[in-house]
Image 1 (cartoon, rainbow, N blue to C red):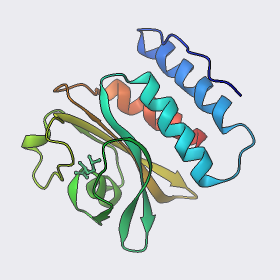
Image 2 (cartoon, helix red, strand yellow):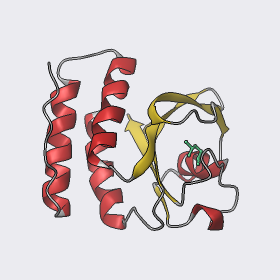
Image 3 (tube, rainbow, N blue to C red):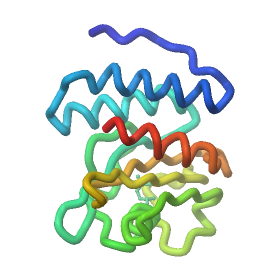
Image 4 (cartoon, protein in one colour):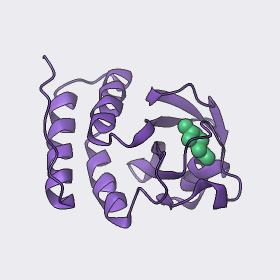
Length: 156
Ligand code: SME
């Protein structure tokens, strides 16, 4: 399938409807988790041009291991409750961080990052990983993004 550039609507409802369509298209009937998450990270990165890192951390025992992503090399392991990702896992809820310098315990991977959103991935009532997205812009991710992404990641 060759990638067709899509224009994302500016309004959040239209934007997330388009994002879900794109994710559904690239998930298709693919069953391999790496294949699915690799394309999901690429689809989401295309939709968020101001994100400097988009990817997944996946539960592996008592820590999260980095999964498919788009961006600079990043920390490979994050402990339960550590950083923004480990906090989302421990608190069992999404984290929206307007300014990472103000988040105690934030794990810096790119000193250009200002804001971050982390959304848990759920299966059968358990978290199996998180979507992590960083932006160079302060306050880039909103509660509307949290809701939109929480819905979108159900397709993964
Ligand atoms: N900032 C994250 C670490 C991962 S990088 O952002 C890619 C955290 O605090 O969990």
